[in-house]
Amino acid sequence: MGAVLLGALMTPPARGIDTNPPPSPPDVADFAYQGSEVVDPAPGGNGNGIAEAGEYLMLRARFANIGGGPAAEASFHLTLDALDPYVTLDVHAVTVSSWPASLEDVVEFQLTIDSESPTRDVAVVIDVSADSGGPWHFTDTVAVVVPAVRFARRSDWVFDPTPRANKDGAANPGERIEP
Image (cartoon, rainbow, N blue to C red; front, side, top):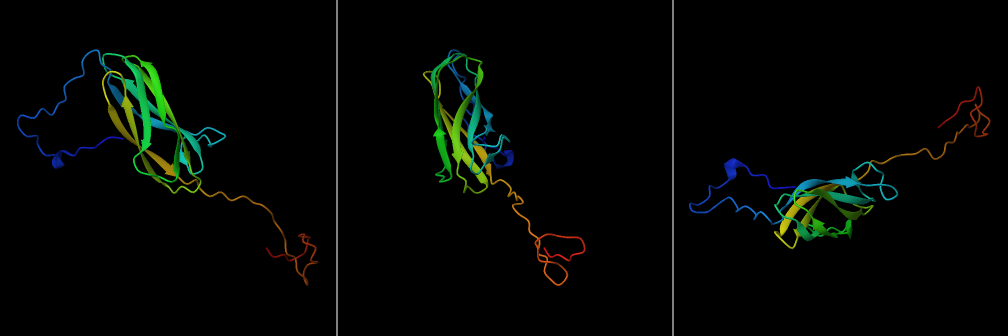
């Protein structure tokens, strides 16, 4: 998601360096990333909101234009932070023709997780550009899990050998059977 700064590990800024960036001009767009959610509807997913191996899913990233002006031709590009043979980006670029100031909205990307994918975190990068302001660079993590193994009963059989049974494959009263 974002960087975590630990005060004890920070180096104090050198004198004369402005550590606060200048505010955006009042008529320029400024995007803020507000997190994401995984949506995995049927038929490609199971609807539990978890990115699992073998699923087709949507990553819904929430953004807000916190600047004073609108953004025209806002482009959102999703990339993987590192090459990943188990993740395919099906829809990785979205362009919004107009994004007014103060608007919060969702940009939806689509991914496929290979059925052989191991459990791990997948780091993603979202780069945003617009005709005014920016560019912006955001990072996030998508947790991918391997679904639990489910066993289903497929068949049963009964072994009823002689001498205490009749070998007919059914458990009859008085017979001794083996699993």
